[in-house]
Amino acid sequence: MIDETTQANLEKAAQRIARYVDETGRSVRVLGVHPGQRKVMHTELNEIDSVDNTSAGFGVFRHLVLTPHSEVAEEPVEEPVETSDDESEN
Image 1 (cartoon, helix red, strand yellow):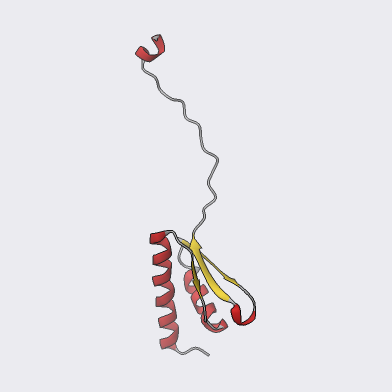
Image 2 (cartoon, helix red, strand yellow; image 1 turned 90 degrees about the vertical axis):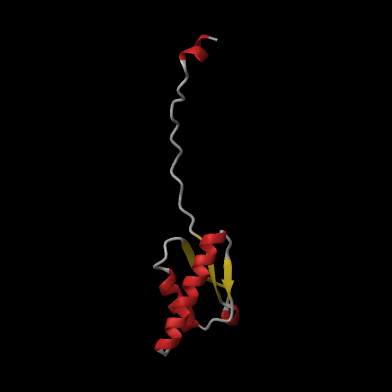
C-alpha cells in the first residue's frame, strides 16, 4: 500500500516528466519504479493528453515510458490555389 505522501509525490513527478516530454518532444524512460508506484504514475499520466505512457521491459527491468502524444493525422485536404488574373494571362 502506498501512503498519501508518496502517492502525491509520484503524481507530481509524473506531471513534471510529462511537462518535460511535452516541451522537448523527447521520450523519457523512468527506471526503478515498483509496480504499485508505476500504477500511480500511469493513472496520473492518463489524465494528461499531451503525452502517451506505457510500461516496457520484463521483470525487474520493467519501466515506464513517456512519449509525446501521437495524434493520427487526418488526410490532408487539398485546397485550390488562388491565382491572380495577371498570372493566368502569362
